[in-house]
Image (cartoon, rainbow, N blue to C red; front, side):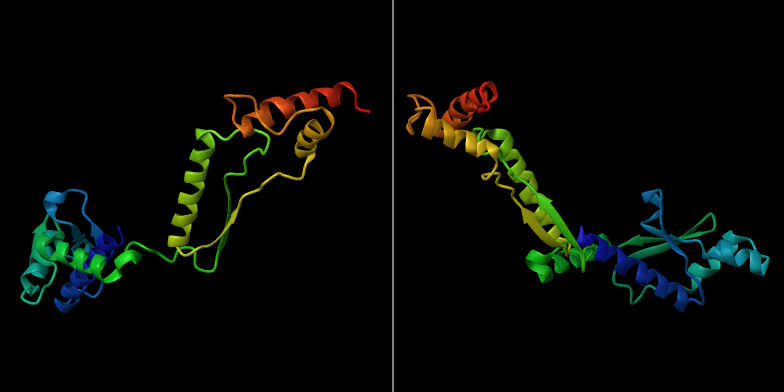
Length: 214
């Protein structure tokens, strides 16, 4: 993406220079809607037509006749179509420009500075300590970590938070279950320890506490 954008900027800059060298003070470059008419086009002939009292189509022809492509790096041809001055890219050179950009930037290829000087906070994972982990938690970890990496790549200062709720009443209920309700530390056969804590000890302790708050 970064290389393509850089190549497009170079293409536009080259077209602007060619037009200015041809005597067009305000090139007015835009992307074409129809790729058959090239990649970019200038509407300068329409703007000049009103000032000079001429037909934009004839002005466009005059402009392209003054354009010299001998030193062009990315532009292959230029043509006048219904008043527009259309530029077609030399795709071999354009592609080489993108590849050169990729190779020169290495791992920083595509990086932007959109978030320079900005901070963003991303909270992810933050699982319930009294519930067993499952694939949904793994999904949140992947999404959160991916977003954090993307924002860092865009220049943001990223603060990652993982709220581990291990000091609330939920943990107190589990501790109470082990210390006062006679639950052993070893889970039943076929049950993992996190399942045991969340689905057995915590549930029963919370039920008992609600039934007898004393």
